[in-house]
Length: 326
Length: 303
Image (cartoon, rainbow over all chains, first blue to last red; front, top):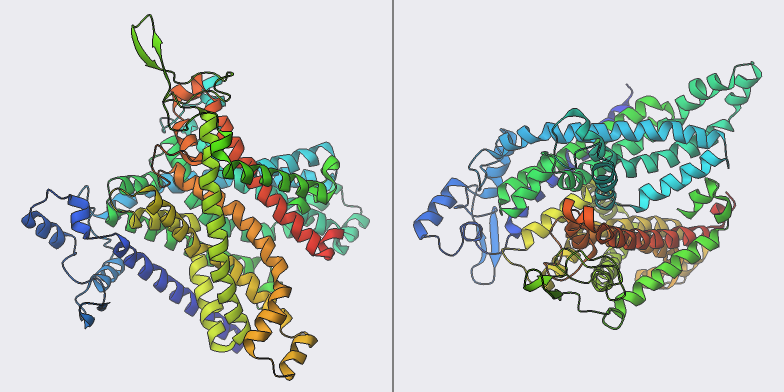
């Protein structure tokens, strides 16, 4: 570790902490966007003052939203440290995301209960995407302009322009209504993950197919491939041991960036297939105006996304020494 | 996209311009449909049709009817004309799409220009920090949260459109800002800009007269791709129940209404037509964007 590396590492770490702080703060303050009194918005006009007060007390809504406030009536006003922003931050650091307005249960418990289903879905989608895109991309890249290459380009086109909420119901129509091999919704047995995972992974596999193909074509033109061929290695070994090793490096970064798309896309996919994950939890929270729950889910997904992105950044540096320093 | 399609070797589509022509054509159809929706739609998109049933001796809803001369694309689950709803649905997509592209474009260009032109600590705050924060959120998730929180109990259609536009602009500007900043950093070192500076041109004159015209081309590409993204995002939010409230038709809500098992079984065209319309519109703006990028960048044309 030389000075330069340490400096770079600290710079990256600093930015990471700064971004996390801002994102959490923004999510914390998101709840202030709700028009009017949050207690009134949730309980309705019929609520008695006593009920409203009890609700405010229960959900920490009785203190001012931020350190200070500014409006035309009262001007600038300092509220001190007894504010919602600081309280929420204290909660975040001690693993307490507040209590759900609707079920009265800790939000974090509700999220932990549902998160594994979403992670399972996202990983299955990732798996399907890699399973489709790597062989298809390699075949298309090594046999330029062949039938399989054209098929790959058509597949990639469909994957990009067909959004999940069109593809998902179409898959249900074909594989659950016409040919009844899958259940249309829910997760009753193990194979029920196939349709949702394919729906979620389709766009990703389209992007990956395209990436694998172009990076295989690029690598095939490199000197080391000519050397390997001149040594008399079989074409399979050249492609799968030499070309793929280098060709998959850019794919890794895309995977990291796409994780956020997967998590956000999971909300839509979970709605289509009634999958009991964090996405349906978010939508339930929106429908019941459970703002505390929505806030918690947004926070957890955003933080997962940022951490995953930083992690891929790091992995990318490990895999490809050329970009470690730049 | 055109680039890689050709790169992937689509033989009949090997001509770049042909694909972007398809894009322009589809986009024109989409825009004209949206503008002239009331004239094109044969029926009221909200009206539920019914008929007298002699067997039941009462009025029944003409729901899930197959395509016919009267209802070109059939009727939906509530007996409304799918074709008329599809035509009117284009209006919301276009309105939200254009507004998001223009508003976030202006914000992005200004912020990107500031960051690139003045550099220094302003650039560090904007490009080093703010861009990263905005990109740290998965865009759709933030839009969902903002729309859900902004619309209290019963939002009016106009409020919802406003909220959708706000939510998408909050994350949308950063794409333009990055493009603009990159262009400014490149162009400001060109000899003619240096010459203008030496002649005493102020920063505003340098920015608007000398730098901006050079940055316009990549911004148009960005706008076209952003249009595809905005149309898709509006449909996604509508699908999730965060769009214009019913009964007003949007493509997202039409798809949501059509995915019940009973509708899928007896009237799948209720899903297929809005799905195809959405996919073609997204495709069109992607084709235009990629076609323009290749056209504007001769280096890419040869690849």
